[in-house]
Amino acid sequence: MSSPAAAELARRWRWTLAASLALLALGALAVWACGDAGPSRHFSGLWWVAEKREALERLSDWGLWPLYTLFGALLAAGWRRPAWRDWGLAYLIAQLAGSLVLVRAIKMAVARARPDATAGSMPDTWLGLAWDADFHSFPSGHSADAFTGAVLLCLLLPRPWMRGYALGYAALIGFTRVLLAKHWPSDVLAGAAIGTAAALATVRLWLYPRLSGSMGSLIRND
Image (spheres, rainbow, N blue to C red):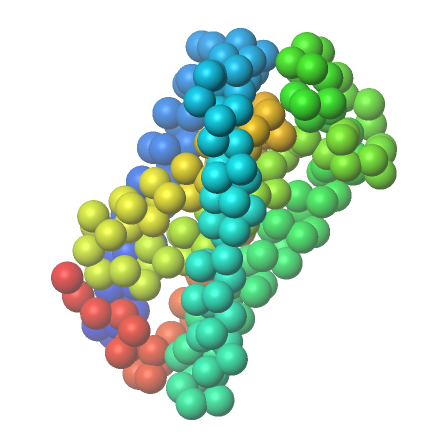
């Protein structure tokens, strides 16, 4: 194990944990204070949302692809450098455990109606066990995907302001889901929490023990 690289990764992990918890706590406070229905109706009903809906939909859906592409490229290039492969695999593991398995299972198990399926009413419509995507609001898969990638990206970025941009970008993706009335704010918050937890746990439990000298070139000091 490369001690300088391991120490730097541990430092970034702690920074990312603290920053993520602060962001999630702020979101939880907002949801507790304002609820789900009011903010959802307000933001999705803003006059410019209808005008910019197509652009918002592109950002919401295609905004995840830079993260997919980055970590997919690292995985594909793993034959050249094991460190790249390991980071790509870490992303894949976190996505499978968080977004694919846990998020999908919860969606079907609790079956919460989406805002656009309830015309802005009945935010607490929880049916339980549904296959219909209109009732797969909780939690937000887009938010889980975005925060999984952003958190892992934070661990690769050397400067705090870069990591702040990465987390802010993930939060923006989550916010578009509220603007488009695809998710309630609490859905976005839950998805962000799942994605963050999956990424941090994967790094701590799987990637960190594999840290070697070859990986040290990807973990540089500020």
